[in-house]
Length: 640
Image (cartoon, rainbow, N blue to C red; front, top):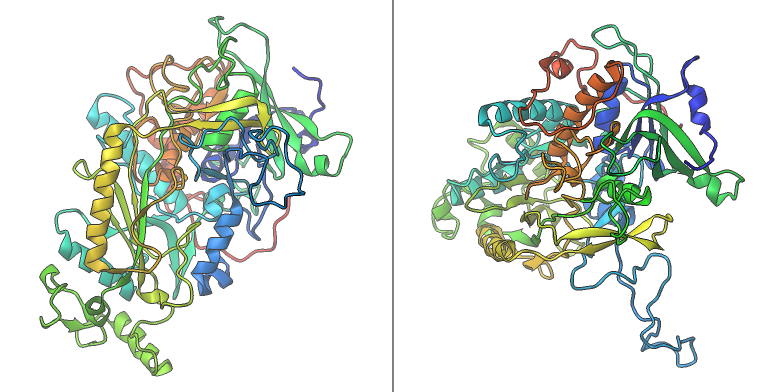
């Protein structure tokens, strides 16, 4: 173990306590889930986050700011600014079109080795769209808030072979996760555009389960409040002495922004062949502000009993690789985690934007056969005779306030949010909506009220050839091992991607014509930002990184978290499922911290133990002081 000082954060612990119960790297929704559950049980938790606090409320969704509610396309720039591409192949140092007198490398094939480029990355097997976000709240500060559940038998991992027990466990976990993040599928019920698109697709595809997209959000009068990791933290920053339903006072919770977890240190130097599980003693962290200010000390240790890495599907294995546990090209050395980075998955993605068909804008579709026949008598969208009161009031007010507007749709009418779920016959997840991503802005030349985005997400099963390698001799901008991707879609899933594209064009044609410049296209691999499998879980230590309690094989007190855990192919958004793993693992940590001694080696679950109902009671009982409340009270700017 290196000789570094303890971080001064230890001074905030209660008298007589010199060690945190739990150390967490990463402040996104998954790290927040661990923190909320464990702090509410009275445990002392220290969390570090590489990035800064970028919102008034820590970890809040930036899309809730008024300027982006007024112009959603401007939020595209926010997302682009928040994302850092994970691996950029180096180009040659000589630029063909540069001034002839400009500097040129003597070797015309010499690559650029500037920070941010990766000379080891090949173009043909890269994930060029894969990126990371470094800030308090992580990607939840700019995500789409889509929180569907995985399809059993296809996407959803199996804790055990007994389907009844497995389904019961997932049902309880999903219910708890939905409550924590505030998922709903009714928040857009009073949207004209949402109802038009929803009913059009339900009529066109009656057997595909077209329904509202489950989203983490809630309505506030005429507006939508988007949820993020701050909804999971709840009042942890403003009510540190809160008592839970059992009368237990919250433990100390400290969040250190601008603090990078660089590596973990073992308590001893036992060999990987030693049958006794390894014990992490301290986490090594770097105060990035102190480093930039050239202060004498910027690297410190944080001591804890349990260590949780929730730094993302790239950041988590990166820390483990930098700790010397595996995931590098140095295969000649013993590795504590030999399967680190093997078997990654990603989601092939297709995208287009359509301008709604005239008869959909002008009329309210009631049968699929009427979609292509304007002569059929259907109801005018502005014919209010049988519309619900909210519809009548919205259109009447809009026409009164804006008599020259050619569209009878209020300017602040909520966007459509529709999904066609994954199925065995069509193994892809469909989102039909109008939202901001890192691409797909409409621009000022078309009325955004009649534009709809179509995003189709495919899946890829885990194969060992698809992997992420961390280079020990190439460093990223933060001085950590540079990730290099080796990824190719399997033939099976490549064929599925073609079918998915054909399906998207069929759905698009039911709704309208393509927006110029936004026709059907495959997006860059990795752009879905749903990388999986890098720290995959399972029951076999020879093929996975951790067990189904997220405890790393061979370690007593090390847990991993996030989308990288998921061992199965998946097309739907993974956040809710990753939260389920965190809820389950947090209960295991609670059990471990309650034992004397705390030694609990990871083991396969040949006979699954259900998570106790008592672990979920706070999420079901509205009278419980910790029951999630997502309508926030305004409060002052929070600093750490």
